[in-house]
Image (cartoon, rainbow, N blue to C red; front, top):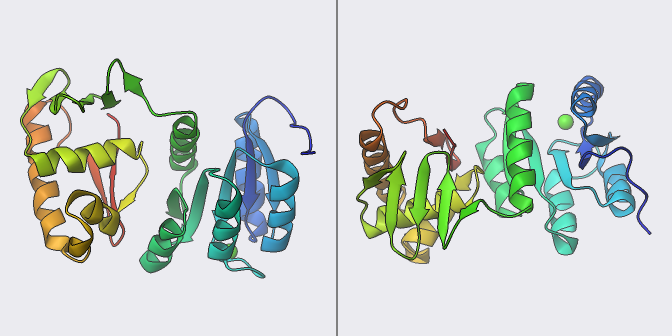
Length: 238
Ligand code: CA
């Protein structure tokens, strides 16, 4: 039997060996109604994972005992629980490795609490099911995709996309605000043989941004598709 929940908010397992960061994040999340289980190392984290089965795992990759990726693998063998990674600046390969092994997203240290809250909300919302409107329409902020009809609109204005651009946007919207690695986008849109053809992606993302911006010029340029240097892209709602 799993241990009972404390309070009414989602249960978050926080795995962080730095005591100051752990206390700060735990206190802040608890103040926002989350039920936080804070652990300082990988072994304790896995024990608490088994006991609590939290709604989300917030995982520092640099732990004293276990490699963060081995914790991600362990969790993924058992559940689809969202995993948000805390990663050091400049460790892009480590982030991609974590995402490849099943982490859902990351924030880079030092991070602001508002960024952390936005990522947490996006992951918890997503695990509750994607936003859908009517028959097969998927929306993110003011961008809406009608998948069966292959139609796109921004703030109600239609946008004409090529099949590749449409597919790129569909994959980014389906990720619900999470980062999608360059390799995953290339494989999903062009196929496995194109996994290393980063320039295709660069060109098509630029084109897609240009069309989305032109459809709603009053919105801030380029902000909808955010680049995560060295990792990939994410679609932010606006
Ligand atoms: Ca650490």
